[in-house]
Length: 235
Image 1 (cartoon, rainbow, N blue to C red):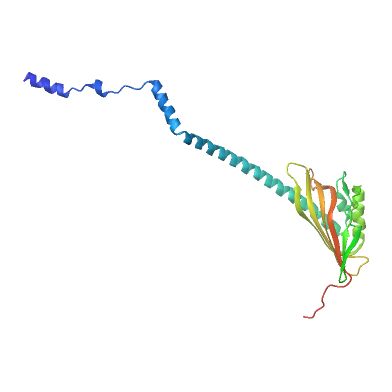
Image 2 (image 1 turned 45 degrees about the horizontal axis):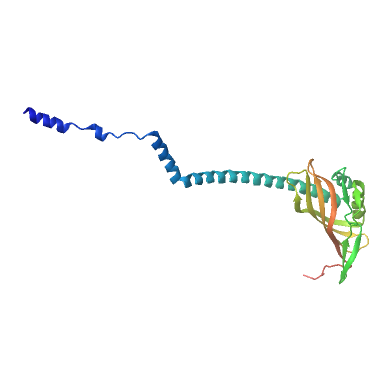
């Protein structure tokens, strides 16, 4: 009986020395981690690349946003100055016109009072504006405008629009090409003509409204007819 109990007890006894696993040495654990990173190195590089893309996208977006807003606001201020100038010319208001020119203005003749006949077609004459490139100061520039608008018996419309902003980013000197148009009747004509021109203007953006610091002629002409262009057709 005692022998049977001893056999049963030995059967229930488990040799734990065979089932308990020993922890691997520290060197083995480190080597295992290194092996994992070597096998999954592409995941590390992919994560780093994703972070770089996010940072670059954020930086690019902020830069584009800043450039866009500066373009908008400076363009808006140029338009405001040109609208005021157009109203002053339409009203022959030389005092308001003078206020738009910077005291240190230095530009060139716009050719407004120097036109050369270049073509004639069916009583329609085309004159080209001529600029001699002479450098002039503020008062001389205003005198050219005065002589020009004084030469009209009537002025129907004057428009000045931004054609292109050529320089605006990070500077207080904004440069723009400006489209000019005047419809009016010259004193020595019986019909209205159309004067069109492109000017390059430099604006002082350090003050509001922007002041004109420089202006020069790009190209321009006058188109006018010796007879009425209306057909006079009945309804």
